[in-house]
Amino acid sequence: MRNSDEYNIRNNMDAHMWIEHEGKVIDYTDEQLKSTSSFGTDNIVRKPFSVEQQREVYKNVLEMYVKKHELLKKGKKPQYYQGNAVTLEWFENDWWQNTGHCFMKALTYKKYNPTAKIVSGSLGFVQPNGEIFYEYG
Image (tube, rainbow, N blue to C red):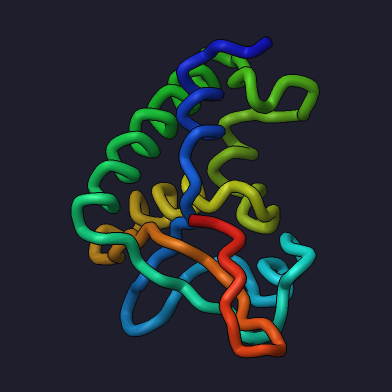
């Protein structure tokens, strides 16, 4: 049984996070997002949370981000990554291609692009009947 704060924050928060920067959405590719869900379609919907909810998500995600950086700077792996070849260099560079790290991806992008806007909310897929299946958030 895991009981670390990082694990609890990550696994009790249902949200997706992306960046809006210079008129573009910075996120995983549509193909990557579609492949994360059994209900993935070509028509992807991002629905921002309320400002208050986004603040709460950001606060929790920032705390998790700082904890992961602290561990990696010490040469240790966060509990979530045990068994993986994780280094600070990997964390800041290589994981951009892997889904499942939207929070860390958004915060790292913002770190190097201060004018970018972090958005958290729901990510869904429009189904053939027109309804939206929300996979995250």
